Image (cartoon, rainbow, N blue to C red; front, side):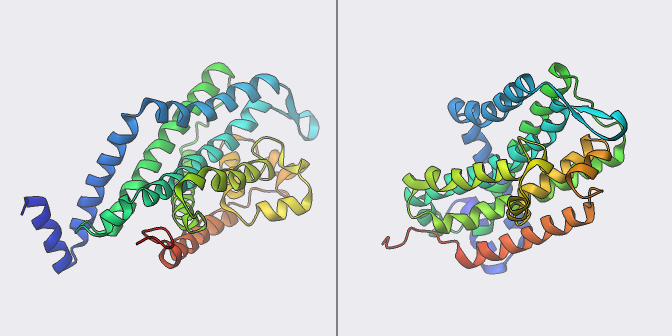
Length: 284
Protein backbone atom coordinates (compact mmCIF):
# COMPACT_ATOMS: atom_id res chain seq x y z
CA UNK A 1 0.00 0.00 0.00
CA UNK A 2 1.34 3.45 -0.92
CA UNK A 3 2.06 6.11 1.68
CA UNK A 4 -0.87 8.22 0.46
CA UNK A 5 -3.24 5.24 0.56
CA UNK A 6 -2.08 4.51 4.10
CA UNK A 7 -2.77 8.10 5.17
CA UNK A 8 -6.21 8.03 3.56
CA UNK A 9 -7.02 4.70 5.24
CA UNK A 10 -6.04 6.18 8.59
CA UNK A 11 -8.33 9.10 7.85
CA UNK A 12 -11.22 6.71 7.34
CA UNK A 13 -10.48 5.12 10.67
CA UNK A 14 -9.72 8.24 12.67
CA UNK A 15 -11.78 10.89 10.94
CA UNK A 16 -8.94 13.41 10.76
CA UNK A 17 -10.13 16.85 9.66
CA UNK A 18 -6.53 17.91 9.06
CA UNK A 19 -6.02 15.04 6.62
CA UNK A 20 -9.26 15.86 4.82
CA UNK A 21 -8.04 19.42 4.34
CA UNK A 22 -4.60 18.26 3.22
CA UNK A 23 -6.08 15.84 0.69
CA UNK A 24 -8.50 18.55 -0.42
CA UNK A 25 -5.64 20.90 -1.17
CA UNK A 26 -3.92 18.10 -3.06
CA UNK A 27 -7.07 17.61 -5.08
CA UNK A 28 -7.26 21.38 -5.65
CA UNK A 29 -3.70 21.36 -6.97
CA UNK A 30 -4.65 18.59 -9.39
CA UNK A 31 -7.78 20.46 -10.51
CA UNK A 32 -5.79 23.66 -11.10
CA UNK A 33 -3.09 21.88 -13.09
CA UNK A 34 -5.65 20.11 -15.26
CA UNK A 35 -7.53 23.35 -15.88
CA UNK A 36 -4.54 25.50 -16.77
CA UNK A 37 -3.05 22.79 -18.97
CA UNK A 38 -6.14 23.09 -21.20
CA UNK A 39 -5.58 26.25 -23.29
CA UNK A 40 -9.04 26.09 -24.87
CA UNK A 41 -10.78 25.88 -21.49
CA UNK A 42 -8.70 28.72 -20.05
CA UNK A 43 -9.24 30.86 -23.13
CA UNK A 44 -13.02 30.59 -23.17
CA UNK A 45 -13.37 30.84 -19.39
CA UNK A 46 -11.67 34.23 -19.35
CA UNK A 47 -12.54 35.44 -22.85
CA UNK A 48 -16.32 35.76 -22.54
CA UNK A 49 -16.39 38.14 -19.52
CA UNK A 50 -13.58 40.18 -21.08
CA UNK A 51 -15.47 40.43 -24.38
CA UNK A 52 -18.59 41.58 -22.54
CA UNK A 53 -16.60 44.25 -20.71
CA UNK A 54 -14.97 45.53 -23.91
CA UNK A 55 -18.11 45.42 -26.08
CA UNK A 56 -20.58 46.92 -23.59
CA UNK A 57 -18.12 49.53 -22.30
CA UNK A 58 -17.34 50.60 -25.88
CA UNK A 59 -20.88 50.56 -27.29
CA UNK A 60 -22.57 52.05 -24.21
CA UNK A 61 -20.13 54.86 -23.47
CA UNK A 62 -22.76 57.30 -22.16
CA UNK A 63 -23.09 58.39 -18.56
CA UNK A 64 -25.76 57.46 -16.05
CA UNK A 65 -27.35 60.58 -14.62
CA UNK A 66 -28.18 61.14 -10.99
CA UNK A 67 -29.59 63.94 -8.84
CA UNK A 68 -28.26 67.50 -9.07
CA UNK A 69 -26.34 66.75 -12.26
CA UNK A 70 -24.32 63.88 -10.78
CA UNK A 71 -23.06 61.41 -13.37
CA UNK A 72 -21.22 58.12 -13.51
CA UNK A 73 -19.73 56.59 -16.68
CA UNK A 74 -21.52 53.44 -17.86
CA UNK A 75 -18.27 51.35 -17.78
CA UNK A 76 -17.97 52.15 -14.07
CA UNK A 77 -21.54 50.94 -13.53
CA UNK A 78 -21.22 47.88 -15.76
CA UNK A 79 -17.87 46.64 -14.41
CA UNK A 80 -19.25 45.89 -10.93
CA UNK A 81 -22.06 43.77 -12.34
CA UNK A 82 -19.70 41.95 -14.69
CA UNK A 83 -17.45 40.92 -11.81
CA UNK A 84 -20.45 39.40 -10.05
CA UNK A 85 -21.59 37.65 -13.24
CA UNK A 86 -18.06 36.33 -13.73
CA UNK A 87 -18.11 34.80 -10.26
CA UNK A 88 -21.37 33.01 -11.04
CA UNK A 89 -19.99 31.81 -14.37
CA UNK A 90 -16.83 30.26 -12.91
CA UNK A 91 -18.66 28.76 -9.92
CA UNK A 92 -22.28 27.77 -10.55
CA UNK A 93 -22.05 27.34 -14.33
CA UNK A 94 -18.62 25.71 -14.53
CA UNK A 95 -19.05 23.40 -11.54
CA UNK A 96 -22.53 22.21 -12.49
CA UNK A 97 -21.28 21.45 -15.99
CA UNK A 98 -17.95 19.80 -15.19
CA UNK A 99 -19.24 17.74 -12.27
CA UNK A 100 -22.14 16.46 -14.41
CA UNK A 101 -19.72 15.46 -17.17
CA UNK A 102 -17.39 13.72 -14.70
CA UNK A 103 -20.37 11.87 -13.22
CA UNK A 104 -21.53 10.85 -16.69
CA UNK A 105 -18.03 9.61 -17.56
CA UNK A 106 -17.96 7.47 -14.42
CA UNK A 107 -15.19 9.43 -12.69
CA UNK A 108 -17.30 10.22 -9.62
CA UNK A 109 -18.30 6.58 -9.22
CA UNK A 110 -14.64 5.54 -9.33
CA UNK A 111 -13.67 8.27 -6.85
CA UNK A 112 -16.50 7.24 -4.52
CA UNK A 113 -14.96 3.77 -4.41
CA UNK A 114 -11.54 5.08 -3.34
CA UNK A 115 -10.41 6.09 0.17
CA UNK A 116 -10.40 9.77 -0.89
CA UNK A 117 -12.83 11.65 1.39
CA UNK A 118 -15.76 13.01 -0.58
CA UNK A 119 -15.31 16.39 1.10
CA UNK A 120 -11.80 16.58 -0.37
CA UNK A 121 -13.15 16.19 -3.90
CA UNK A 122 -15.56 19.10 -3.44
CA UNK A 123 -12.91 21.17 -1.73
CA UNK A 124 -10.72 20.79 -4.80
CA UNK A 125 -13.54 21.96 -7.06
CA UNK A 126 -14.38 24.99 -4.92
CA UNK A 127 -10.74 26.06 -4.62
CA UNK A 128 -10.44 25.86 -8.42
CA UNK A 129 -13.59 28.01 -8.77
CA UNK A 130 -12.33 30.55 -6.22
CA UNK A 131 -8.87 30.93 -7.79
CA UNK A 132 -10.33 31.20 -11.29
CA UNK A 133 -12.89 33.77 -10.12
CA UNK A 134 -10.18 35.86 -8.44
CA UNK A 135 -8.01 35.89 -11.57
CA UNK A 136 -11.01 36.74 -13.72
CA UNK A 137 -12.00 39.63 -11.42
CA UNK A 138 -8.43 40.97 -11.50
CA UNK A 139 -8.44 40.91 -15.32
CA UNK A 140 -11.77 42.74 -15.48
CA UNK A 141 -10.55 45.39 -13.01
CA UNK A 142 -7.31 45.85 -14.95
CA UNK A 143 -9.15 46.30 -18.26
CA UNK A 144 -11.63 48.71 -16.71
CA UNK A 145 -8.94 50.83 -15.07
CA UNK A 146 -6.54 50.94 -18.02
CA UNK A 147 -8.89 51.13 -21.02
CA UNK A 148 -12.02 52.82 -19.68
CA UNK A 149 -10.75 55.00 -16.81
CA UNK A 150 -12.78 53.12 -14.23
CA UNK A 151 -12.02 54.55 -10.78
CA UNK A 152 -10.99 51.95 -8.23
CA UNK A 153 -11.77 52.63 -4.56
CA UNK A 154 -9.01 53.95 -2.32
CA UNK A 155 -10.84 53.15 0.92
CA UNK A 156 -9.59 49.85 2.47
CA UNK A 157 -13.04 49.39 3.98
CA UNK A 158 -14.58 49.15 0.53
CA UNK A 159 -12.03 46.53 -0.50
CA UNK A 160 -12.98 44.60 2.65
CA UNK A 161 -16.59 44.70 1.47
CA UNK A 162 -15.43 43.51 -1.95
CA UNK A 163 -13.64 40.58 -0.27
CA UNK A 164 -16.60 39.31 1.76
CA UNK A 165 -19.11 39.78 -1.07
CA UNK A 166 -16.71 37.92 -3.37
CA UNK A 167 -16.12 35.12 -0.83
CA UNK A 168 -19.81 34.61 -0.06
CA UNK A 169 -20.62 34.76 -3.76
CA UNK A 170 -18.07 32.04 -4.53
CA UNK A 171 -19.31 29.86 -1.65
CA UNK A 172 -23.02 30.18 -2.36
CA UNK A 173 -22.80 29.80 -6.14
CA UNK A 174 -20.31 26.91 -5.95
CA UNK A 175 -22.54 24.94 -3.59
CA UNK A 176 -25.58 25.83 -5.67
CA UNK A 177 -23.79 24.45 -8.73
CA UNK A 178 -23.15 21.18 -6.90
CA UNK A 179 -26.81 20.90 -5.90
CA UNK A 180 -28.01 21.85 -9.39
CA UNK A 181 -26.34 18.77 -10.88
CA UNK A 182 -29.34 16.80 -9.61
CA UNK A 183 -31.39 18.39 -12.40
CA UNK A 184 -28.92 17.27 -15.09
CA UNK A 185 -29.70 13.69 -16.18
CA UNK A 186 -26.52 13.22 -18.23
CA UNK A 187 -23.33 15.14 -18.96
CA UNK A 188 -24.11 15.79 -22.62
CA UNK A 189 -27.14 17.87 -21.55
CA UNK A 190 -25.26 19.97 -18.98
CA UNK A 191 -24.72 23.15 -21.02
CA UNK A 192 -28.32 23.18 -22.26
CA UNK A 193 -29.65 22.94 -18.71
CA UNK A 194 -27.13 25.21 -16.96
CA UNK A 195 -26.84 28.17 -19.35
CA UNK A 196 -30.51 29.34 -19.53
CA UNK A 197 -30.92 30.20 -15.82
CA UNK A 198 -27.48 31.83 -15.74
CA UNK A 199 -28.18 34.02 -18.78
CA UNK A 200 -31.67 34.91 -17.55
CA UNK A 201 -30.40 35.95 -14.12
CA UNK A 202 -27.77 38.19 -15.70
CA UNK A 203 -30.46 40.22 -17.48
CA UNK A 204 -32.96 40.48 -14.62
CA UNK A 205 -30.30 41.13 -11.94
CA UNK A 206 -29.11 44.34 -13.57
CA UNK A 207 -25.77 43.15 -14.91
CA UNK A 208 -26.23 44.66 -18.37
CA UNK A 209 -28.73 47.46 -17.66
CA UNK A 210 -29.46 49.93 -14.86
CA UNK A 211 -31.41 48.00 -12.26
CA UNK A 212 -34.19 50.57 -11.94
CA UNK A 213 -35.15 49.94 -15.58
CA UNK A 214 -36.12 46.32 -14.87
CA UNK A 215 -39.86 45.63 -14.31
CA UNK A 216 -40.82 45.16 -10.64
CA UNK A 217 -41.95 41.54 -11.02
CA UNK A 218 -38.61 40.60 -12.58
CA UNK A 219 -36.81 42.41 -9.77
CA UNK A 220 -38.72 40.21 -7.33
CA UNK A 221 -37.64 37.07 -9.16
CA UNK A 222 -34.01 38.28 -9.26
CA UNK A 223 -34.07 39.02 -5.51
CA UNK A 224 -34.65 35.33 -4.82
CA UNK A 225 -31.21 34.38 -6.15
CA UNK A 226 -27.60 35.22 -5.19
CA UNK A 227 -26.54 37.07 -8.37
CA UNK A 228 -28.70 40.13 -7.72
CA UNK A 229 -27.20 40.50 -4.24
CA UNK A 230 -23.65 40.05 -5.50
CA UNK A 231 -24.23 42.78 -8.09
CA UNK A 232 -25.67 45.07 -5.43
CA UNK A 233 -22.73 44.46 -3.09
CA UNK A 234 -20.17 45.05 -5.84
CA UNK A 235 -21.87 48.28 -6.90
CA UNK A 236 -21.61 49.55 -3.36
CA UNK A 237 -17.84 49.16 -3.69
CA UNK A 238 -17.39 50.94 -7.02
CA UNK A 239 -20.25 53.47 -7.27
CA UNK A 240 -21.39 56.60 -5.39
CA UNK A 241 -24.25 56.32 -2.93
CA UNK A 242 -26.72 58.22 -5.13
CA UNK A 243 -26.84 55.20 -7.47
CA UNK A 244 -28.52 53.26 -4.66
CA UNK A 245 -31.26 55.90 -4.51
CA UNK A 246 -32.22 55.12 -8.11
CA UNK A 247 -31.64 51.36 -8.06
CA UNK A 248 -32.12 49.99 -4.57
CA UNK A 249 -34.66 52.14 -2.78
CA UNK A 250 -32.42 54.75 -1.21
CA UNK A 251 -29.43 52.83 0.14
CA UNK A 252 -27.28 49.79 -0.56
CA UNK A 253 -28.83 47.65 2.20
CA UNK A 254 -25.58 45.77 2.75
CA UNK A 255 -27.04 43.94 5.74
CA UNK A 256 -29.54 42.36 3.35
CA UNK A 257 -26.76 41.52 0.91
CA UNK A 258 -24.87 39.69 3.68
CA UNK A 259 -27.99 37.95 4.98
CA UNK A 260 -29.07 36.71 1.55
CA UNK A 261 -25.62 35.46 0.54
CA UNK A 262 -25.07 33.72 3.88
CA UNK A 263 -28.58 32.28 3.68
CA UNK A 264 -27.95 30.97 0.18
CA UNK A 265 -24.61 29.47 1.25
CA UNK A 266 -26.32 27.52 4.03
CA UNK A 267 -29.30 26.55 1.87
CA UNK A 268 -27.11 25.41 -1.03
CA UNK A 269 -24.96 23.35 1.36
CA UNK A 270 -28.06 21.59 2.68
CA UNK A 271 -29.40 21.05 -0.86
CA UNK A 272 -26.06 19.58 -1.90
CA UNK A 273 -26.15 17.10 0.96
CA UNK A 274 -29.74 16.12 0.18
CA UNK A 275 -29.73 15.93 -3.60
CA UNK A 276 -26.23 15.35 -4.94
CA UNK A 277 -25.60 11.86 -6.31
CA UNK A 278 -22.36 10.21 -7.39
CA UNK A 279 -23.76 8.44 -10.43
CA UNK A 280 -26.49 9.05 -12.94
CA UNK A 281 -29.98 7.74 -12.28
CA UNK A 282 -30.28 4.18 -13.46
CA UNK A 283 -26.51 3.68 -13.72
CA UNK A 284 -25.08 0.42 -12.41
